[in-house]
Length: 113
Image 1: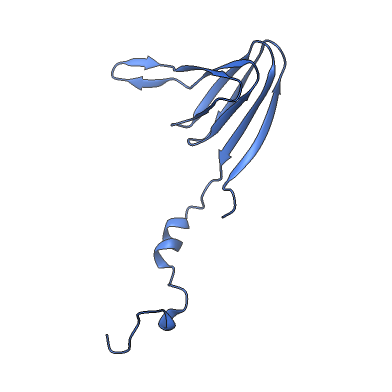
Image 2: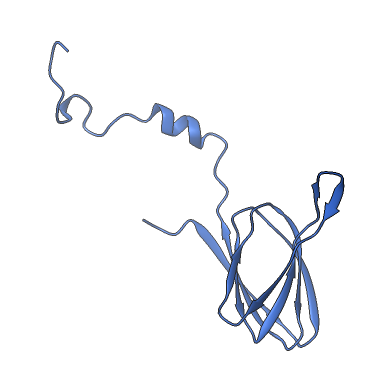
């Protein structure tokens, strides 16, 4: 099955801070000694909370929610972003109305049932 993501490699200079918007389900792969990823702020009860994650070389994280993230690379390196492809608005309907392959010739189909 073909990959359902788009891949983007982001080079970062030493000390560079980058902000970008990513959809939920995006994967970030650190290719640097370490990076710090700050996710967009979310309300938890009556507090606005922003989660920070430290990624070392070769570690990855998956974003649970869409939003703006900040990436800091103290020593420089690359960040590999794998973004899930957006589904067309009609994809669930197409799946619902899709007929089995073969129609009446499908195994187990018998006339009169």
